Length: 203
Image (cartoon, rainbow, N blue to C red; front, side, top):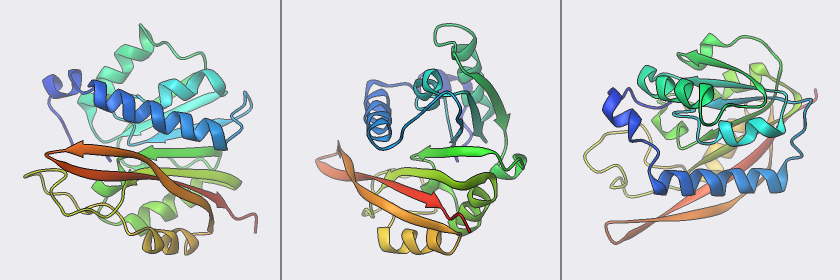
């Protein structure tokens, strides 16, 4: 989930690069998922809502969840003003444990999972709230050299896809597809971002 930020950093979060990455992620989801007005979706580690606010016009309702109060305040301002969602929405400050209803059709998360120490436990929580047959979409970094975040320490320097896929399979998900959807250039290096689609088993 997003690290806690001060208000100044949260206000300036929506940089052109982040908007571009979010737009590409949303575009890939639209290509692979038939979003409709009957669906309830969750934006996990939502930050300022760059992904969820773009999906909101397509669905019935959106749950935004993040651990950063400052980021959620920016999201609330956007939701009430210039980007008012056409769908109903709920904003939750806290970890995924704060949500216990088992009613999510699609859960998506962009660039948040590598901030989570125990990804297996988090994926298990995803499985507990996603309906059977529902979809989980993860967008994050492929394994990298640890320099992407500069001096900031994060639990995971990207992900090795087969290992992440195994964690998903351990939690009642079947991986449908995964591929690189974007490349970020930073300090003369290139960092690949993957998108992964998994389906909750029907049992």
